[in-house]
Image (tube, rainbow, N blue to C red):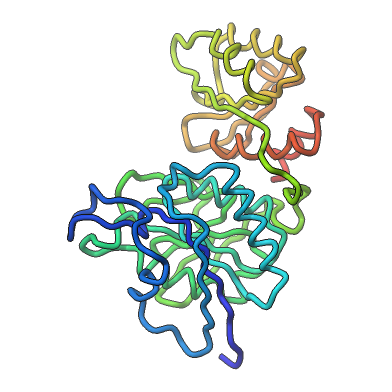
Length: 328
């Protein structure tokens, strides 16, 4: 390469920085080692790399919340104005897909932003963190990654921050995009892009988090056989919006439909999502007979919650919110 590449690593903890009994893949403490020690597990980077490191936090990713999301997004937006060429974020896998989607909607740069992590702690036999981090750093320097939104680099694959989901509880190949496949592959330091997400992201997004301190509260409810309808009243009394993780293609009972119609008078939007994990939740007149209810389309419940929360920062119109679910 004829030029140097400045890659900035933002560490948040997670299993990739976890440590425990030598050789074991369980019983470890997440976020135990520093990013500097993580880097020492990698082969020496080529001379054309300039790698800088920053510890944002050091937590199990189940401790990630909207305050940390806002802080991380604002930090990237600030640093993106500098000579940094790309960003790598080390993150726990349990909520990595949520953070990736939030950043996909809120960072204001076309520079590569790559999330990665590990399913095995740094002290495990055949820890997967070093390869994932090695490939993420190289991907962040690739011109091919520019303008593609926030990406996830994990187990030799490249995923869209919009569609990536964790799909396995312990295997190292723990992520995919369900029906939508991956965007491409990594082989050592080389990337091979095959697909691209068409959803609007990053610099084209309408969301501005620069002055936000918290996000509007949106809760997820699970529908199941015999689910009590008063659960809707309970959560509606606390949240500004609801996402229902329904059966099948976003289904629930007649009693829940009636209660959702009542919530329209309280100006509470309700998004129909599905617990299935594959397929689409599309508009259905049997469910969208109330103006405050609309489908999540291809977003799973945890990502529908993020989008609805951000949508509430810019509009109170149900119609505009639904258009966002089609667009983002």
